[in-house]
Length: 491
Image (tube, rainbow, N blue to C red; front, top):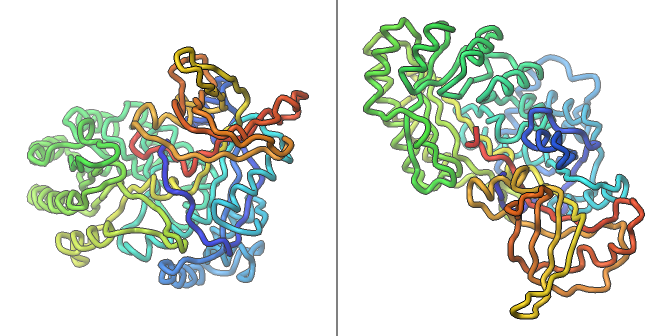
């Protein structure tokens, strides 16, 4: 999971929440739950207020809906669901999630809803609040900033069903990196033509599954992968993944995947000798890219490889600029896209002008998921400890999630997720606001399962919890990790 900025939205916005539901069985958190370590639930939240930077995309969405025949009988254009999305299919998704309005938006609105749900359901386990309003506004901002680049959401980033259904309705494609992800998206009704199997090294069974279900596009970066494809599915439309490293990226990927540009001619020759069909080039600059010049150089290299492939007789028709995008909001609730869109637009216009007829896609994951999810982890145990050397009182707290679940970013990426304390309404008002040096532990028996090692933490989270030992679920407060989302680079 990856930390992000707080959900930045004006307090005058209107949101909705859907009843809490289990997450998909293949979710890493659900696998964690199946071990008896957590029990994930999800509440879907969305807001109505449109951001300024999405106006052009809204107009496009209204026109797009008009081309799809009559309105869904469940949805009217005056409904808040349609007003929130300007898209009939997306509005239907919100309707199907049995959404209810929240009185206000932003992190305060999310926190208020969390407190309501805690009071109503007496949670003892981890749960998420997923802001689908953020997701919608991020999609509109993307379409306004890069209208020629179709986003293919990286399913591995966060496979929460409501998020996937909304993105499908909005019109994204999907980047799948495993057979499980392919299965999930096909079961949701995504057409195979809207999927790219973006894993350069696949198991034979994965290749056969894609073949059986009509998934045509996949990536490769080695000769061995070409020989597997030739034996099992020579009809694949192959996309050569090249290495394009941003050394400052939060998670660099080139050390594992991506062929060196200098190796491309040999790989193209091997593919040609095997009778395989190479149709494009892809790259990934690394998760949370910082050096935008990396995109420029990678697109320039892709054009060179296009020319080399076309000299062999290939019809090159796809450029995949990968991931590396982040999606945050400013204080007014507008999406902060930065210069990344301008950088990509300029490079694509220079090297792949419209008359070439090349389709351009990207694989954003973190962009859609990072600021759309807030994780709440109940505190279910606490302890006082006095340091022998100093005599200073310190506190230990146990929470329902840890390094082997939602906070794996600490272990794998060296991240430091932001948090805030949400006091459960099931406890009386706190009598103490004293702060102590504290440690927050994950739920496993592993002493390395430490989420926050030395933090100054207020005792108000659990003050009075000893008075509620009646099984009511009022064991303590909740640590709220803001905007955690599985990193798009982890599969």
